[in-house]
Image (cartoon, rainbow, N blue to C red; front, side, top):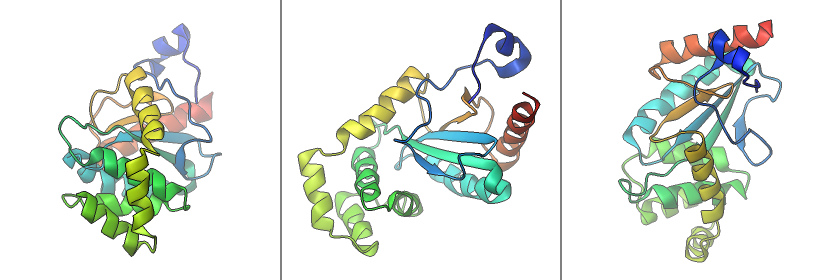
Length: 193
């Protein structure tokens, strides 16, 4: 991830920065050696995040090993009643090495995220849904989701989806073509530094 200095800001690397560095705690798809890291702050119940999901998948396929993708939680609980439990469910699945499977299922089942729906998803993944219900009751994964959320707040995230490319917030549209061009620019900058 680039270090932002006054000189790099004048060279076009400025803008809102990711304040919580990508690390061991993150859910990552792709190689650590990738030239570009995209971090998404998302909400499983957000209609725009649901629209972005297949775009992000297509970008991952198009860039392959050149891209590393990180997902972080930013549940907008004041407008999405099921977002918090969905985020907690994905963290519960992570303890079973199934974060990405749950992530993908939550997005492909958008609009069906009641607790009963999420418990059914857990069962379809082959897990004991009673364990997830107990995790919700114990608030076991609230601190982990809150850590992502607060990192987003510190980074200036106010809505979802919000993308950071190599540590700088992506301020343009997030359609396939626009995101691809932004990733290619970041890749060229990383190769030139």
